[in-house]
Amino acid sequence: MISEFDLIRRYFSRPAAHTVLGGGDDCALVQPAAGMLLAVSTDTLVSDVHFFADADPALLGWKSLAVNLSDLAAMGAQPRWATLALTVPAANESWLAAYADGLYRCAAAHDISLIGGDTTRGTLSLTLTVIGEVPYDSALRRDGARTGDAVWVSGTLGDAAFALAALQGRVEMDEADRAMLETRLHAPTPRVSLGLALRGLAHGAIDVSDGLAADLGHVLAHSHCGAVIDYALLPLSPVVRELTQHPIFDSCVLAGGDDYELCFTAPVEAEAEILAIGARLDVRLTAIGRIVAGSGLQWLDSAGRLMAATMTGYDHFAG
Amino acid sequence: MISEFDLIRRYFSRPAAHTVLGGGDDCALVQPAAGMLLAVSTDTLVSDVHFFADADPALLGWKSLAVNLSDLAAMGAQPRWATLALTVPAANESWLAAYADGLYRCAAAHDISLIGGDTTRGTLSLTLTVIGEVPYDSALRRDGARTGDAVWVSGTLGDAAFALAALQGRVEMDEADRAMLETRLHAPTPRVSLGLALRGLAHGAIDVSDGLAADLGHVLAHSHCGAVIDYALLPLSPVVRELTQHPIFDSCVLAGGDDYELCFTAPVEAEAEILAIGARLDVRLTAIGRIVAGSGLQWLDSAGRLMAATMTGYDHFAG
Image 1 (cartoon, each protein chain N blue to C red):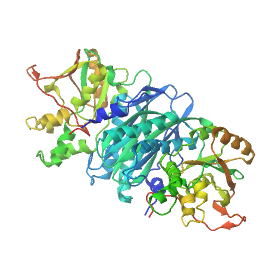
Image 2: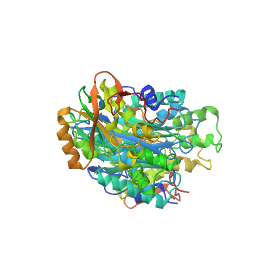
Image 3: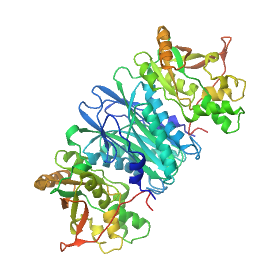
């Protein structure tokens, strides 16, 4: 069977940019740009918790890095370096080759270099740590939202959660619709370019990974303010728009998870500039409400009345 | 049950030094010192592979960080920041409290700050990523050994491997001896201060985590040279010295793993300076042989004759 050293050499040793010394030593050595802060984030995907054990390894490679890049995007950071801690039940070479291909494809698309890592035998688990760079004064933080800001969200909400529900037989849809949603579940697009474009413009920002309600809730809690969101303005894909009457609609769209969109706040006057960024990057950007004094999240129905809704996001240890 | 957010807040949110923004946002933000390289390393400990599932959580907390600090030590890097990806079967609060205590105790002892991470439910697994700082020209690399250098090793070899063998019933010893060796297995001391002291002095360096034979072998391969090691000079603890005739002696001492000592090469003229460093830091440092032209590792017996020995280190995927 292939050794750990050969495994790393064969599948995870492609050239790394911005790197003094890549894999193969005790540590990788990299040189950060002068005067920049480092943004650092770690996320783990575990088999049977975050994905099915028989998931397509190339898609897993993409997604395992993409979910981490989404955190860099939400800080407005330029991705630079990543490490991989890969735990696999066995050294299955075709699986490893496909996983590495997906990972490096996502890395190349977002200009980040894999500089090191560790491989271990055990239950399939993928931990990526990513490091990005951001100027001292323009990091997009959760605590930056201000009363009067507009609340924006990128892309569409609930696609991944409905895809998972379809895979689990909780909702029915035709094959083409399901395929469209599954792409959103298995190959999310981290909004890295959007995060960079929002430097100096957005006040508060977060990536929507546990559902809009929970993640926007974190922004509100950190920023000591509230928000009123217009339920009818939530951006939906055509497939999900057909499912608004489905019993799981709210749980998928407001508390779904795996959206990997950015939710951010910005001055109302910045609307035109933000829409221009969306047009330039070909990313749908939708203003869905306002930051208000107070605390907590309130929802308005299409008639402008407050709705009773208490959606919370996905939590690995609740329940 | 405790939520993921409360779990992090309760157990993994102690104040972080050298940090602009700690946990609680999408990323941590840290400010590297001007002109320094970053040394980055990731290591995973998996239940039933690297430790027993019922292991003392406080010791696991210490060890999971210590093994990563050992990689920074081997580069001569000053530890700065760490992230933790913690996968646990359930949110057992007494386990988490003890694990966090052990982790933070090791962090405090080596001046590194936990700045973020992720908690997930699954098979118990602990992935730490550590970031340190090292000046551009004084990183201790595997490829720096030169013909004529003396080969040094810190501490003693084989203690942890014999402790594991005792736990597995493969070797018998009295309780006091076993307790001494178990401390070496469960609570290794990363040689951070030694790595810092060797900046500008050592030519090649590595930490001994998979056994001296394999790890010194990496230095030789990267440095394109060979080594002749004097078997009788290998540093042994008093307990292990009593076991030299045991059938597993070579496999424990040369190919054991979990030593977390430093093996380094340095000019022969530096001997007095190196011994002074060892005295100042209270770390035993032993010259065990020489770097020679050619390739591979050769062993001399006490009569100065070449021995037939082909020891290799622990490999997660071999066999």
